[in-house]
Image (cartoon, rainbow over all chains, first blue to last red; front, side):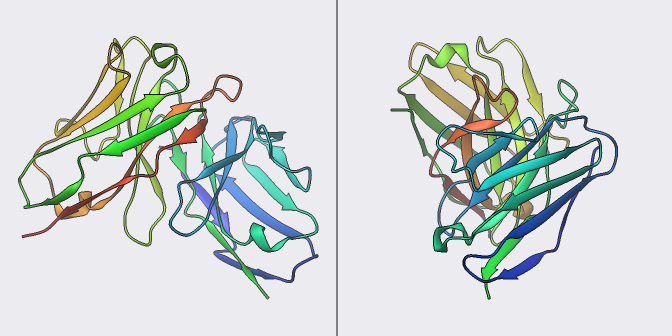
Length: 111
Length: 120
């Protein structure tokens, strides 16, 4: 099973600043990497797929990069609505179960 | 507008059974693979099971294989998860999620979730 590890567990950043979140895979997942945002009491929301492509309606301040085992989600000029938990997910294992594995999440909080 | 609405959650004793449903609308249901993803209280996301658009192919996480069964009724635009031999560690919010059209192998729409609590 491919294990996804996110760091840090909690990131404190001031509004208007940049946030950099990391996701590492236990083995190469090529560019088969997705990022989601989840706010309290809500379902996850798709942000980035294919490691670097923004989903429909996602603001340009969200960007993804990386390939292989190291990935980064960058949020430039943080806004109040960006404070949430972020998860990475790999799908390189498809079609062999587990099809998808998630990281444990990074909580982005207001400094 | 795509909508996914889960139902069927509740309190069940260990060893019991429950069937979850997910009513879909706003897209051509039989064209998309669907998954169930769960989230234990205060924890992260765990993929549980997936089913192809036709329903002919199913996949399971090892943690639920042999106990859970995913199915779909494309005439009713509904996804199901039959959960048997439930354990305390199955306690979670269960989300149904639609696979993306462009964002393949990612989940572009999620339901609001239904809470399953396994407790004596």
